[in-house]
Image (tube, rainbow, N blue to C red; front, side, top):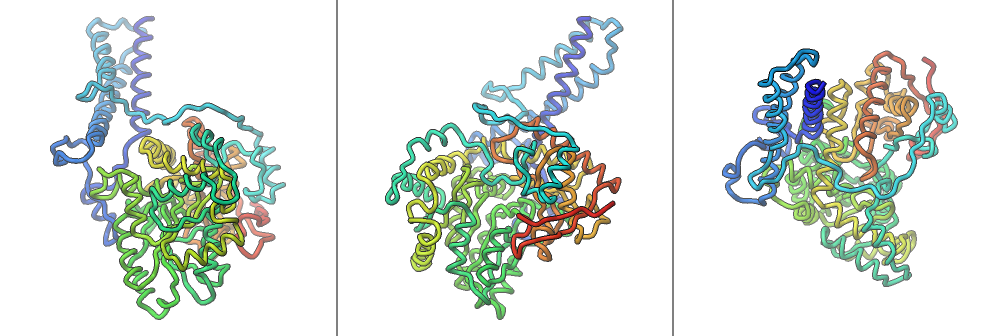
Length: 576
């Protein structure tokens, strides 16, 4: 009996540790000649990175803890090999047969070798990256039957935005304002000053923004789309064209509402699964053709969205930002950054771009800002707040025009539609979002989720991005025409089968401008645990099986508004 328990214990360690290594495998795409083939002539190539090299290979420079991290990954590989050998040797033993003493000693040594992994400073080495927080307050999740969820969806006109959140089990509709704030943020809200003008809360907010983004003028707004509204009230207009790597829905809507054209100039790839470290990059050659062509005079500004949400949460390289900045400024055009997920983008630059690995996230963020003349920001994303945003610009004349519009639509310039307590929450959030343990956990969560889906044959946008998983609905439902909204079909199935609310990013959202049929599962920050993700993986696997069977209906729009139709359209399923 004792031998049986020991054998089971050994197997349990092996399975657990192997799972940990698999769950948290570092980004290793692509290397050597594969990298060269993947990059082609696109800007922002990635150099080969060997996580197993020792300090001498790094030239002896840089921050010490990065070398320590490389050693941790090398040790993780040793864990994987040790676990494999442990599982192989232990599984070959029959617990019903007496185990020789030598075999018992061998098993004990194998277990001890797993427990004895340490770095040169005597620190234990663990492969698992844990959530860098403790849960202090909880709220219930509601579960319903499949029949009930079908009724909820029907009553919501088959529009997932119209569902009551109480009827949703896992809400992956958006990561905007849906995350959990920290104890420090809640504490900061208690000292919020609600003065109409000159609030010290605004001073703390402005200092936190300028610490990362040293723009001359900072105008608070109640959220990112309000900053877009203010900006394009000044820069937009009939006959103008605004280039971007990819406009997201509200950005496009505000550009077009002003009478201007929203033009996407993203680097194109053969498929959503084609691997490149910076698939969010702007096509510099296309931008040059626009600025040097007859419509160049109609461009009021150039925009860059980081990370590129509509393209699968893909990052933009620092090299690409420099090229875009140089080109825009050579033609006298200001560069405006849509910086909603600036910290995640900086993390990808640090981990994927040559020469950036030993730099801090804060330094990379400041470099990004130094290339731009202004920014729009939703603090509901990488501000780690539930509400808020801002517009920041350097040009005095443009700032004066925007300030006038801000007072007219949002409020006075030291509160901009926000309570003082919200300004303080954002100020603390900007300090927390650039902390590397948080970003490591954040990106690894998406990595774990996405790799599990890919391993099950479920098509996703690759490489995996920073804030969400993007299912490729056109590959899941290859025979469904775009007019029947395959992305929406998959999104509805995720809800019906498992209570997961996701967001279609395709023909329903963008109409004829849609380049892909995607389903975004955006993970709220600091909100869900690994077991929630494991459940979501199971639901996705079930939906993928139904898609292969041809059991998912297409949808048609029966009523829609003139713009941003995905928020309020009424839909009906086609009969299978």
